[in-house]
Image (cartoon, rainbow, N blue to C red; front, side, top):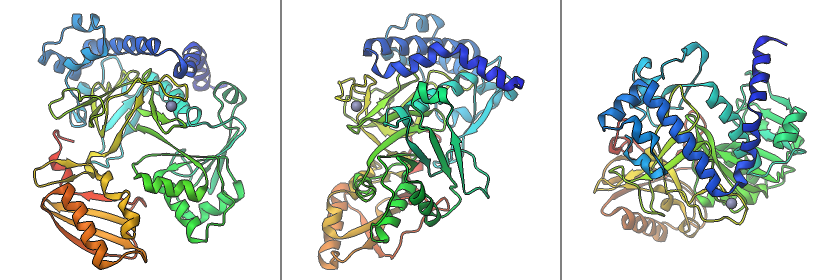
Length: 457
Ligand SMILES: [Zn+2]
């Protein structure tokens, strides 16, 4: 066994009690979980105060002393700490990376840059450990994968050679026993087109499919176009990476005849929330702290959508403390869920801020209202909203036979003006919506949204 492998096994072994805890935590009494969270948070803050130049300077700027951290008794005490943005963390490494870490011992990572310049950050050993186990828990355990499943990864998950059509991962027995990881995991090349990937899926007939929401949607569309006949009937479809309106999720569910569950996370933190069978996003509060705040940085009342701030409890090399990740959502709810998980629930999660549109008052309007109930009624297949200046929208429409120009267009116009106020709308009829180079369909494209963000991003 080489040294790196030996070190890896040794590390796993020393972490065994923590691994067992991670497995148990989702069902532990809430008070116990909250205690773990607060303990980890205080450790995290103290470390940043002592060893991270950027955070030390930020804390001192608002007169935060070490004693304050030591005396913290509740999560609410976090409110005094400054909010950190992507821009803040893009500074020089010697400011951003905690002292005592050698860059070459860390794993370099970056955000996708969907809201601007990608952020480069470093993952330390603690963080890598957390990502593995919390990631498995959220992607596989909470969503309901079983150890005798065949599980297919359809999008960019595991690295794959460009000329490889698919890759089969054999799960180690210990991982099947400890974590219920499916015994056969197959990654299909994300570089192949959907027709190819679908043929392979027809052969594999997986129990679980994991994909970006856009790939799941194109798979469903491909089955629908061919008359709906398919052997692909997974018990579970798990999606991440992106927001999609409920009606489209419903379509995927109907076509694939499957249970569909979302996982929520980001490059900065890994996957830290997953939907249970009641479609509630349970958040891993033993790994992160999630807050929802208003424009002034004050906590929003329960049920109100605010800017999400995430604090990572494991990454000491590049600390993310009250980091504004660009998503909008509500504060966590500790109401009991019938599924039995005690991890608190994120009651609402909205799309990326950059996908918002702006009304004449300069308010960001949540895009979800654009796509719901009335879509059937007016006869829309797909629609894409483009905003390049305030007071003006362009709507690209793919319509079906129910669409009636004399009725549907005025109806659409009234829906938008009702939500947006005085606004000019141009309609364009297209046979297909243009995809991004990545294959993604962006249903809301707004060049404006970025300039209406409260901070540099
Ligand atoms: Zn639940």
